[in-house]
Length: 149
Length: 93
Image 1 (cartoon, each protein chain N blue to C red):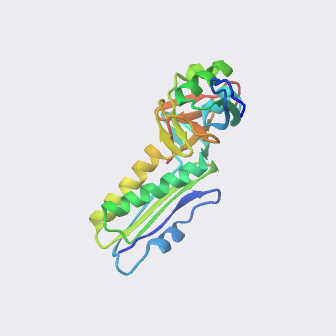
Image 2 (image 1 turned 135 degrees about the vertical axis):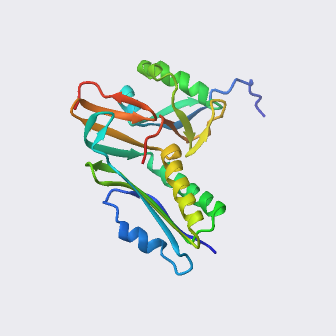
Image 3 (image 1 turned 120 degrees about the horizontal axis):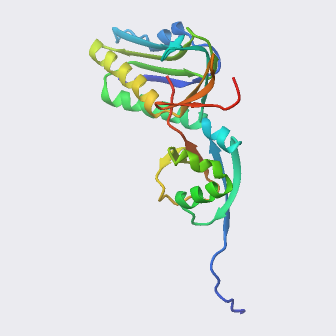
């Protein structure tokens, strides 16, 4: 079964309905959708907004690579991974992962793999705007931007 | 036929360097075009960039390098016309 793959970056708000429609196939009874949304508090600090940016050409390529890896590891009908770019407020959807599979084991495992690897490998960064200023998040580190925010 | 004295190659190639996340603030640029000696490695380029942007040394090379959108190590030789990206630890999702 050749799964449909749709991955990429989006400046526009992400649609859960569109992701579902994309992966939905009669063969594949199990559908898993993961949403990553912006939290209002991190490490006791209030987030006003997050600004996502990317090395766009490479991020798109890497998302394709991840989807192809998922396809080779699990029996999947459809794969969607879309990540937002630009400014997001708490509650907004930053990333959508959707997969469909004949069985739930593959669907859950593939969705987990796709979000984990998106967070580890894809050249995307968030810049956090909070009460005490603006900082880049780089891996585990918070790198404040001097004199702004 | 004229004979030419053989000389070391001073060929130069032009590449583009891309900076991301806090590197853009440290260096003050999102990207720059740079001329480097033909046959330069990533290591050579980083030394050159650190000379040109002294604040870059603060980063202690805690970034990965991509050449034409594929990750490489410091030994990699840079092709002419390459797009070289300095990629700090990522934070998507």
